[in-house]
Amino acid sequence: MAKMTNADFGRLIRSEEIQKAVRPPKKIERTVSLKKNPLKNIRVMLRLNPYASVLKRAAVLQAQRKKALDAKTEADRTAGNWKKVGGGKAKAPTKKAAAKK
Image (cartoon, rainbow, N blue to C red; front, side, top):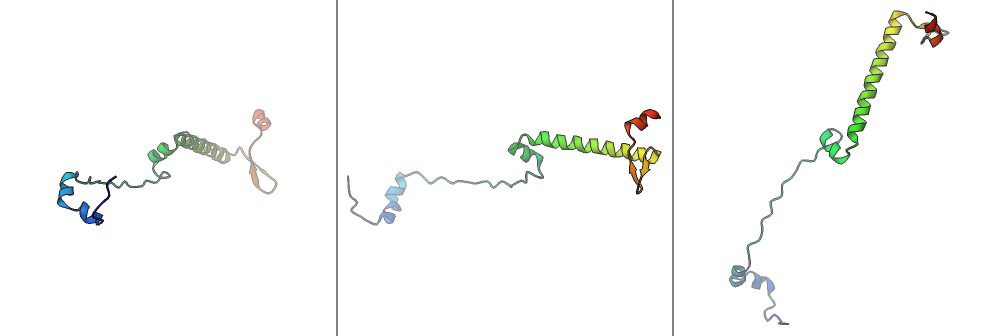
């Protein structure tokens, strides 16, 4: 193995003879992507967790069912189908009471 006679490696590498023989350095351009919040951006959430669409749909359906039930309950209250019990709290009619009518 050949030994270096000149120990100044930095000066040797920067010399014209060496620079002509080696290829130019590659310039790397890095693109910066904007970090997106998966809790606000559904597409990013689905990329991280594909099951999130099922959970989101279930939550929407549950909210619709609750809204429909609340609307029905409010309609029953305004129609007078609820009776007052004890301390003035309204109670839903039972199945037996509904069958009598």
